[in-house]
Length: 70
Image 1 (spheres, rainbow, N blue to C red):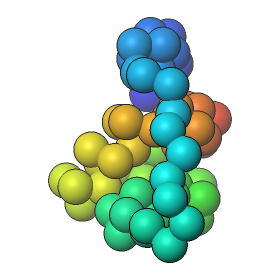
Image 2: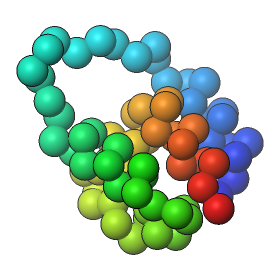
Image 3: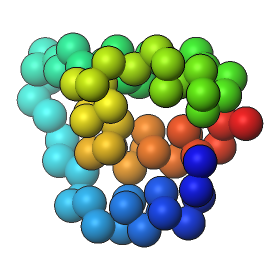
């Protein structure tokens, strides 16, 4: 809910590493799908499992998308 905090968190993350083709992280994939489907931060929060939240917190692009929700 705090864009400044989210930006500070994102700057602390290491640069994203490319994953090998076919190496799909189910928690990352589900977190991405849920963030893309959510219309509000509250909705995203309600849908994400603890493992999906951790995946979100380690992904700059997902954090950016989350911050842009209503």
